[in-house]
Length: 164
Image (tube, rainbow, N blue to C red; front, side, top):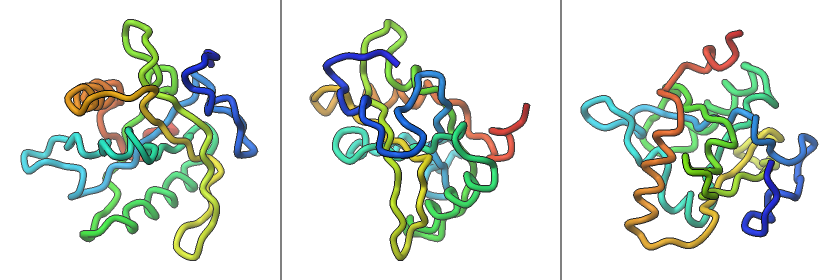
């Protein structure tokens, strides 16, 4: 991981897994029908603007959990979204790819963000979040979201994440 003054949040470990390393694979849960357009392609809304700008885009640290845990967490995500959604799969990218543009510019901070158990959500120590590294105007945020979506793999079933 590259240390810099922009993403100081990355240097603080909140879970037993520690800071998110550049080589770690991160997964975004994709549910159907919510994250798909009518033509079957992935909707950019799978990466909500409000999440990448303010809240933190929820990501699973797949190298820190097994297939059973990722499957469980994906089911929780699908159940938490209104509209009778079911897990369709995941988008996967490594943390370095999420953090930096092709030219090496820092675009997103990716940090350790464990989820603590509540009445509705189970604990997830292997959770991370991504946020824009700096403020941008709306049109630039939409452009960066599109570039980020392109950095992730096509949607794949959870079982494929763990094939060797």
